[in-house]
Image 1 (cartoon, rainbow, N blue to C red):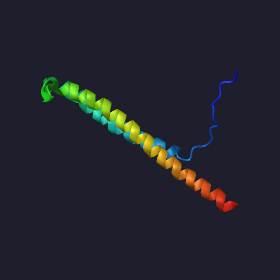
Image 2: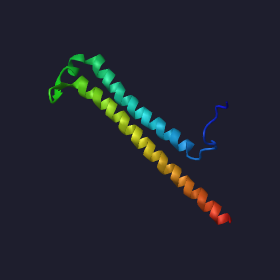
Image 3: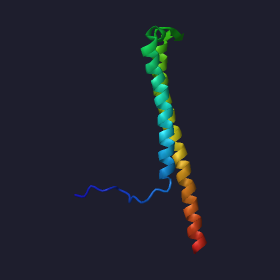
Image 4: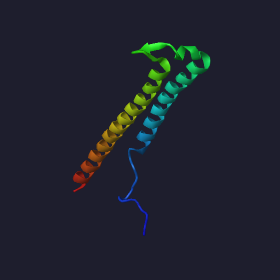
Length: 99
């Protein structure tokens, strides 16, 4: 039994764009997470302060980290699909122009 991809994989013209976008989003999230860690290291009592609906900063920030990660994933997917469709339109216009 062969274990190959279900669809043939070729060169991805949007690949460099995806890499740059992914690195930028990773840096943003890393800084966001690093600030969470920094607050815990520098002033742990700050994390105990109540900020929203009886929840402390640690809880709110923790949920924010999860929500931001999900939002970034959706944005990344949307922007990559947009770029892929752009390259697909270019490829189709080249094929119809050649015919």
